[in-house]
Image 1 (cartoon, rainbow, N blue to C red):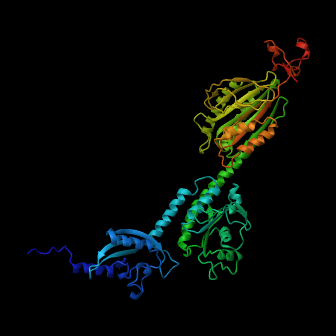
Image 2: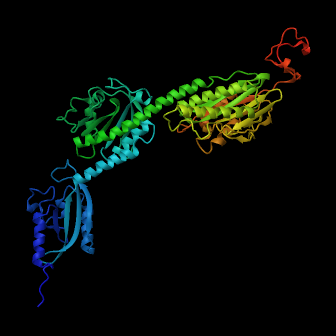
Image 3: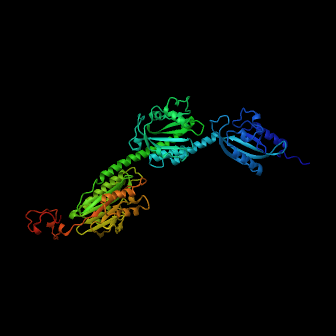
Length: 607
């Protein structure tokens, strides 16, 4: 006779284990028959404590668990009955049947079993309350999403919309983000409370996932006094209105605004200020109307953490806007406000500032009625770049007044740019992403000289886009010129190209930001330039309307010049000998009777 293995269970021992599970296990257990009716259960399941057996036994699991969506669980239980395959840790969300204003999250496992009494198949459903664990995980997920998606740009409105997208639907049915208008304009932040009547801009409103109300965004308004929103702005303290009813701190019967919210279905809300270094930048408001659970102090603490991240993003955007405004003002001051009125060229220009870059243009009067045309672009953005642009522009004008040829001028300007960049590296202890680069490429520049007597255009390019030439008949062609290296290498070599210009021809010089908006921008520019029957100022306006882009991320400059040659009776020419006495630096005295034709004022003359 073989002794029974003590480790092999018997029907009696199995029944004892099952009995222990139903009486001592902390899990909620349900033994269901083939019709998924409850044959046995324990009272550890949340929501069943104090419920009599008559209200549970013989009923389906769906009838017992009224706070959960049990349709999927019932289907899984039937699949387990049919195949014998178990289901492990399936998460279901809902509310306790006795407390519909609370959250409930359970983890359900389903196993096939044979009933101990009659051997009929059934399923054992183990239900574990994981509400707190899932809530903690949801909070961590929200904080992670905030760090990953909020404050990704230096734009305060974008940051506000990112914040709203994180909170809806994870924590709110609707979210509104207000930012002080002064902050959006880049004004320095002020510590302390926000004055009553301060103008705010509704930077974001999200009602449901991906449902933006565009007509309500970026609205300038003043919030009503004595509301949770204004109170949060005044003392930089978050506000929790767990119940928007007569028993709450903001009863709808006493406030028109609260009444309007309650009428819209809002039953709970939070107002959290956006605070950085004791300065209030705005306020974010969260509303609940669809889900029945009111906000708790734990929710408020979570939103405070999320909002602090958004506040830093808004503050960085405001600082960037302030620096950009300063750099733009500096750039505008350094650029010519108007081009000179000349008899030999008609000019018009276009300046489209976006990020306070280093784009510049110039029209320079030269000797002999010649005209210098300049367009350049310093690499980068910011105050340092604008200052570099101003220094290069001044250096170029000085070199141009020495009557240097375009290639020689760019050679000298290349050396100056390299020296200025080196000085910038030596003096800047803290750099920025958009500062002047140190790798040798400081700026691009195109310099052209128009001679109205010879009707020639002489130009050279330092890494700059080639100009366009528009014939009097409206035909557009690219000016052929060898492109030398960008300014800043200190050893660049450049070539000069000379082209003949008919009277009425238009030279179009521009920076690459003008064509950055779309792939069709170059064709659009050429199409607009074909209209030679209008003034250049009108052409510049037409180009602005056709190519200006709100989404552009770089400045753009355009310079147009229409050639007007001088006739033979408007010019005089003398060939002067190579004699130091003819140098204009020596000066000429009234007794220099040996001058040809009695001319005693300059070495050349053009009316």
